[in-house]
Image 1 (cartoon, one colour):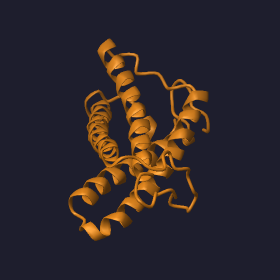
Image 2 (tube, helix red, strand yellow):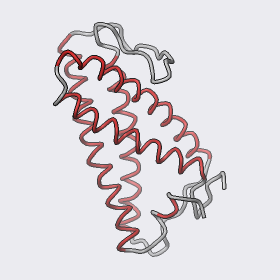
Image 3 (cartoon, rainbow, N blue to C red):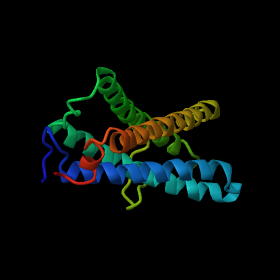
Image 4 (cartoon, rainbow, N blue to C red):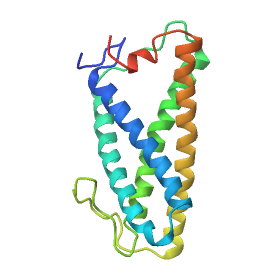
Length: 182
């Protein structure tokens, strides 16, 4: 099934979800490793790779948002309590907002290096958002990116726990329908 229905996700939604989830996991893990473990001389190469994957995630996010905009979103299970519906809606809004803002602050940070990082993993050039900023502004943007990435990690963890709760505690199809369309 290609398109979403009110009961299940279509293949494009599922594929975009899991590729995006993998990219976010890799970016979060690599970002932590890169800023805490890598020796200073190797950091620039790591920042370039991290930025390149981040640019590709942004493109994927745009595709995902467009696909979601033109497709229905499967309904919550009928036995969901009002607080569960609100929590799911707020959680998804939080995920999308954080994915966009973390991506934008990362893009801004990448373009403020002495040599701006402006290529994705495929060598496609992206425009620099700025050409130069004061060091204090750059540090603020980079720190904002870091803090928001940690917040994104927390919201992702809650999202995963919610999906596992649906599968193992509530025994409904919320998790299963993100694995394969029914």
